[in-house]
Image 1: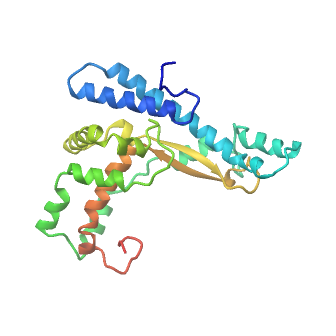
Image 2: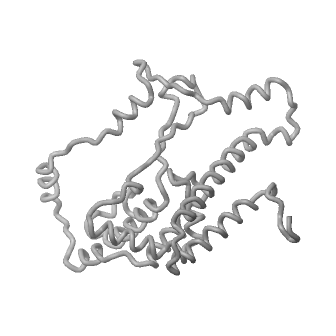
Image 3: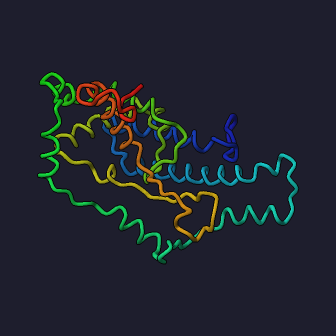
Length: 255
C-alpha cells in the first residue's frame, strides 16, 4: 500500500474510489473515448457495493442495542437470526402465492377511451393557448437539476442501484445526458424500458403471522432517472393546476 492510501476496510473508502473512477470515466466518455464497457462494469460494481453496504446497515441497525447494554443472551441472538431469515412463500386467506396475487393486482386494466373523452368534455375549465404552450414547453437543464436536488435522500434505489445522491454528486456530467434522453423520449412518445421498470418488494407490518399476505405492505422501487422526470413534470403542472382545479381540494393543490 502506497503512502497516504487509506485501507479498503475503512467505511466509505471503496465508495469514494468507485465514485472517483466513475466520474473520471464519464469525463473520458464526453471527450470521445470508448469506455462504455469499463463504465458499465464500474456502475455495476458501485451498485453492488451500495447494496452490500445497505445490507450491513440494516443488520447493524437491528442489533445496535447490543452496544447499549442489552445482554447477549440466546433469546436476543435468536431474534437477530429470525430478522435475517428469508421468507420464500407468502399466502393470502385463499392460499394464493404472493407472486400470483400481486401479478393479478398489477395487471393493466382496460379502459374505454370514449368514456374518458365524454368525462373530459364536461369539465367546465380549460387551459388557454398560453397555458398549453407553457405545459408543452421542453424541459430545461435547470428544471431537471431542481428536480434532482429536491428529491428525497436516503431512499432505496431501483433496479439499477443508483441512488439520488449519485445523480446530485455527478450532475454536471449526468444532467446533459438526462436532458437529451428525456427530449428523445418526448419526441418518440414513449419511455425507455428501464424507466418503465419497477421492483415490487414487501415490507412486514411488524404484526401478525409472517406467512399471511395481509401482514405485508407492497412498495415499488423505481429508478431515480424516472423519479427526476416525474418530479419535473409535476413541477410543470403546478404552474397551471389552479387554472383547471378548484382550490378547495387540498389533496392536489400545493399549500
